[in-house]
Length: 164
Image (cartoon, rainbow, N blue to C red; front, side, top):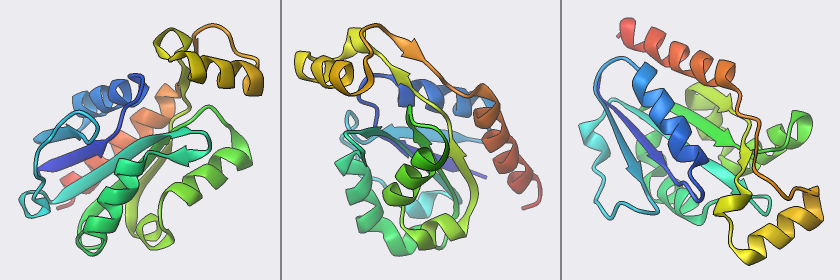
């Protein structure tokens, strides 16, 4: 089974997660960063699609939203996985996830993942550093990636591939 991972990475955390997923997913995996890669994506080339992004100022990246709007009906026909990288936990993280992805896509997904996140202050611009400092009191790099959640997501996808 050929899988596509579509994502946006602002400071490198989502890209790091995509790298981990790519290493642990069975079969051929192609990843496309919508922020950096200027390529046309034909979903007919893939049996499975994973979409991932991160939360900035409470919202997922605009390019992820646009990709979902453009390919919504096709995505409903695919084996689908959705993940989110965010520093919030518990109910707030679930709320951000639910706001990031439409309900019908969430219901149609074989794997959903909340992977924690990172504040990479060293990678942020002046404005971003000021916001993170004011809102969260963070002034240095901080990582709360959930490796178990990432591996569980990959395991669910691999189980799906073995049953195809």
